[in-house]
Image (cartoon, rainbow, N blue to C red; front, side, top):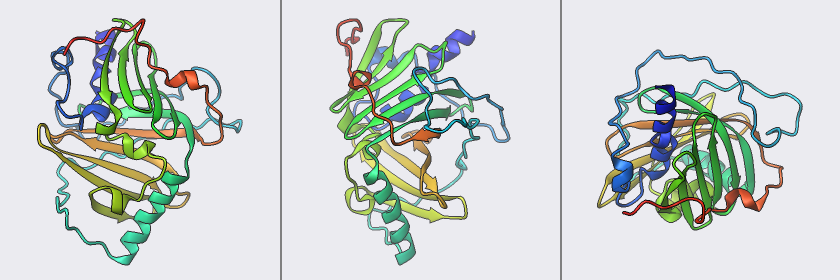
Length: 268
């Protein structure tokens, strides 16, 4: 049962990535994706720190414990107005997030993912801009997600299969762009700030699958990426919080290679 749950996480972070992909999942994927229920409130599962797969994630000696992701209120109502206007403070906050995202070249760390049903799972991530990313779930999950700069693969090592998406049609492209001005390059529908976070919500409308949103959250004090939430066209949220992040490591280019030899792509 537990193994089946982790295999089912083909939906979790894959949902985050594939939510805005035109055409959504392939037929073979769609059959494995259960219809999620809204995340229950009050769930607080304590997780221990994960062991990095290749090397310590930070240059320091102290590894922090996984954070408790901030789950957006599912009843929230973000106005979908492409003509939204923002005051000077909101523009300054959006510019701060844009500057931070543009300054990153590499980013390595751990993540905690919370799916639409409240299930938590951990893993490691590697980002190299522009356009390259790798997410690896903690065992026993067989899932890895790799982007090589143009394509994105959701790989299942147990089944030796992978599904391929154009990177340009996934929400991750906003995180992986070499440089970005959120207010100019995206449809920002909300900018908020408090003592803890600056939050910027981006909305995308796709003719075939509907409207999805990506909410980026950075720390109000340190300006560092803390988490993001993708809301799929059905209104379900997948939240990913990152920790033990390191922006100074040099990464092996092989991390971002999509293997088309040992992994088969299911027919569409």
